[in-house]
Length: 215
Length: 215
Image (cartoon, rainbow over all chains, first blue to last red; front, side, top):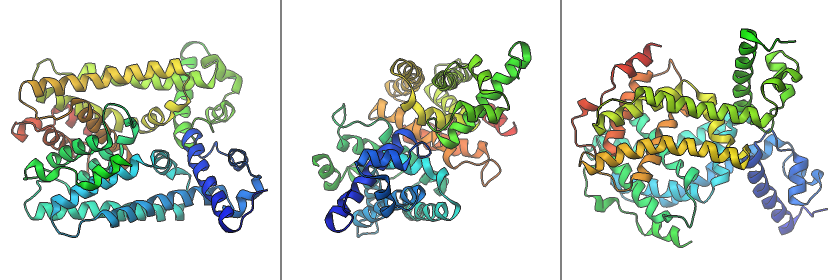
């Protein structure tokens, strides 16, 4: 039986999360059982319940940490200045890089909201709203300063987020385009979509997007 | 036991499809059983197998008919003329109207590709490619005629399709915006994204989009 204290315990817990994301992405949450998950990790089912007392605790933890990670990544990527174009470019770069690196977790987070209890769903939706609010603030600042031409801030934010997250559906590393090339193209489409009145040069990926390619 | 011939049989088959889409959208394909589906429809499990010999036959039928319906709807909506702006506007209107009317079937079609056998997956992917090819042809014509400014036809097609299909995630009839208003906004964003060099007037929804609102 797996030990549950110290670094072995942490390793087991990390293995459980990783296996759970993979199984839920492949089978769906309803079809995944704790017994199947235990077999995948190579522990007794009873061991799982020390980390996650219920299957829904596990799902909720995965989703909450996914959103916490996204909000944290955006906090780190957010530029210091107030320029809406630079902030929007950073948001796009961070969003694409974060989700491409977490394809299965993104599928789970988007598809299994249906399986959360009401209170937990509310909590996850609050996190999502906080993240989308950051984009709406950038779009609103740009529109108010006459840098962007936007009809509907809310619709534009949803359209951009779904367009960007959609990258994970078709993007495969090592095919026609690198992450950097995809990001450059999406930045250019984003800036056109929001009617940015800037030279395309400003919208090129920063050093950060290029770093991602090298990972 | 349900009769399987004549109009009663057709009604039963239609009820099976509708219940299956709802159950798969809610639970996932793996977690849906033929027994559960039979209970939902109010027939014996054995009756289902007359229409769909296996659970995968059922899933494949739902997905194939979803894509056939989309291709047929586009054939009916496609404008007679060659103008890329009018064709792109018609594509956007048709795509949004079709998917908003089929939210659960769209979820099933997008999420359960993983559950199809190789040959059937190939067939569905061929249908998707045929549909996306229509959009790429419009974008290419527009770019070649200098009406659109597009960096990458393939990426732009994927970005547009995912942006548009994303409407089903958040759109609810009877809330802030009507389908017509959403479509107008998405048309405007689409035309900007492809760098259309036309007055916004051309990109307003046609009578067809307004009809959809009245349904």
